[in-house]
Length: 476
Image (tube, rainbow, N blue to C red; front, side):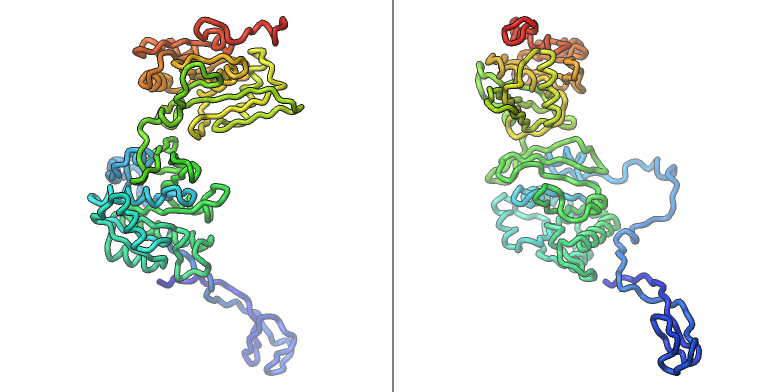
């Protein structure tokens, strides 16, 4: 599959007497010995650098937008049957969609793709291309997962020309390439995984997917920093970019959408690695909320939003006296700078002395979130640990805390309260601006609206957790 080169212009010098050509001007022609006979001319030559046709062939005639606006959806989606996966994709895959799935080694990319391919095989013929494993290894994994095969065709190949030939012959509706860093383009120099190889292979696959309405899943490697290996152009070419955001030895797998032309980008999918493969996590509260009983200091529960999904999250805090001049501040799962801001607001508005204390704040279960609704729960957890007073185990704390110590409203408060009530909680401390409106609609859940940090600290079971009029026992 040779590509047309691009002609380029260069200057050369030719003798007017004998026609001798030289790459640079000469005073005397070396052939006929004539003086001042060399004349400059411009010639075209074929460039040695090939030009990819991956995007050039994917074109159409100029069409008015008004002519296409009334045609309705381009194509129906094909659901994988894996609810957590379909949520990220926006309900399923679209014909011609190119999806990039990246993650650290051993996290379950190949397992998830094999499970998704098996679910889609009754509706779409599947070509599973493995560049890292033999056919027997892929078959052994399918046997462990309980997958019989169906319309799945396996191919162990790294030559892109042979992969494209197999696609032309089989005409599959779904292609899984594991992985894009192992495939090489025969017409381009460089080793598999190099910048030029990854770019050109992805461009050829994109052209084929768009031209034949074939769904293509590209599995990609990541660097030790967690970024996708290869050129950044790879993420620009594809339609959807999914990342596994977790550690290798953690049982919980969090799948996030970084880019999606056909669906949302603020959703997450939760999976748990089991003996039979990746299993969906439908009850997230059991993973992110510890089963500690009442009387535990430094523990509060909130409801964070990941896209449109409310997730119960537990904030844990440990405040201990330090003997060093610079106390430590550590935040795990929460934004570090925001945690420092919350601690400063507590020192100012709750008169809490933390200059000689080490403060450690963490979210249980390895959850990472930037939802500001976790602010109030983090503050109450720090206050609970600092005063050795346990917060009520049946209460959730939802609200954003600002620099002025005020508890601000958060989006989708009603959905958060419904999730808390479903999990068995009885009380909810919420922002005063939105708690009253939602209180009457929550069966079995008492909503306590608060406007400031002081109100949140003074309205816990009718007693004060912190005395805002004194500092360490002395009058302010």
